[in-house]
Length: 378
Image (tube, rainbow, N blue to C red; front, side, top):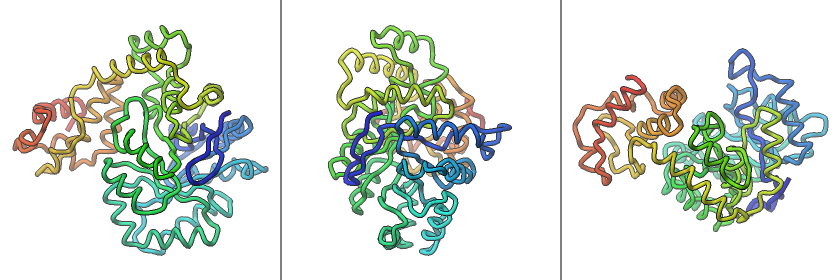
């Protein structure tokens, strides 16, 4: 296992972190974790060098933190850095910050959190928690020892990311990043921007929720297999992110021992800036095929927004493109229904055409929104 210093935190962390959002479950019930197997897997990872364990208040219907607390008994808590996240969307008054943190400490059976994140910040949530006294809470929680390092996780556009980075003396941040998402949300520009300010960088979704590692189309599988360096699709995707010297940790939602072993194997050789030209070319070939399957050439510039009728045009196109790129309509449909509110669905389009007048890509948006409806339903 390789380790890197995580920005201004000064902490030496394993470049592979164990994400506890996709643990094994029972009876197809996301809130019913396979406790014995999950504890076994977390402890196996720790025994083999992983020293960063990541969970959050809502994971597995609120059960993930409880499971992690049990897994870290018997001396395992002292071996790792523990990360969890404040449910920013639930904060409605100043007292809520402390209420949720204290609840999390109890569930995790610990006196302090090593890395505490303000969870899933976007424009709306950022504005909301600021007015409830976020910075006062952080100062108090650090002063009384309940948290050691403070950061945030992010899901919005680059300008919002930069605004949040500049607003406080954060020690680290967590962003989505992979070889298909170099220009998505914070992206490469945001990653480099935060790193230059001394923030440690933690990457989530390096496999795009597993889409880059399972059910690989044959033409893409052929490219991976043709490379002189042999790796699994998961290892290729992880290695792309680890090659960035700004990245401190990659979080992987591992739920099988073979996944943990495979990721640890790659984490033992993934030095920054160590990919060769052939390896980089292989990754770009695969990326090219995925991108060629996009149905809509939407760059998420958002010139089309806001829609007079509330349609989340970039969001609709994102999941529509995913359904084609990864050839998995059912999964993309489920993500569409989760992440695009019903009042923002493509079916709400009234064909006014204002979006097309504003689109710099000259996309026939009304026609493409009809395609989204035909693919995902109304």
